[in-house]
Image (cartoon, rainbow, N blue to C red; front, side, top):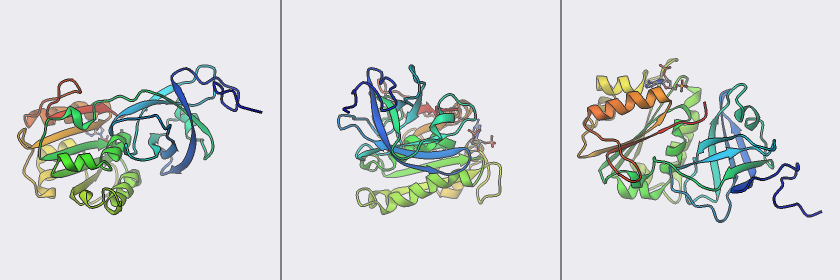
Length: 269
Ligand code: A2P
């Protein structure tokens, strides 16, 4: 029997402006974190760093939540990195998806963590905590990032060592990638942990304030002439990291008004 194109196989409606895609891969990292990949609609275009709305076909009116696309814009699949929120209206169900299941995505991507929202510079800093690494997972795999910047520094701070795994695997894999591997030798990945033993301990804001971040990397502190920033994390982390960058003289920009740094919330919490 032919499937009605406006329904999923479970008989739930596919709302207007939504693609129904198939899950191709799921990997769980911790009891709080997982990654999944879905097929990419042939007509879907986005800029690395953007986000879109994701839902499940499990209700007449599905719940949608914002997710940064973690895969680069040249990839033929779409990847997402998610937290599992106990009792969360979407992630409670989303964390149970398996290969072959259907995921809904709204057709229009958007967001400010895009290269177009930054003025030209020499060094790009990407500051993330937790699942805030997702948009940067896309950007560090995009050749344009390395065409626009001589140096690329990705920082991630997590509570525990296990939560760093996704980013560490990715940063290692990108250096071996046939398309961007050579350019990505200029990527530096700086990991810090706040609630367990690790070579670098502490919040990125404190490490910037003490100067340890710059000492560890052997680079000069941030200047508005040379450095550009992108920030993705919790509301509190955004506020404090934004204040730190403003302290170095950087100014927040947007798609309409590019400047020296941009911010976006790590959405699902
Ligand atoms: P901490 O353990 O000191 O709270 P979360 O999982 O709560 O989103 O936190 C992810 C990481 O972000 C944790 O390592 C956490 O450190 C850190 N963090 C939380 N709030 C801030 C903030 N205001 N500025 C910088 N880092 C923060």
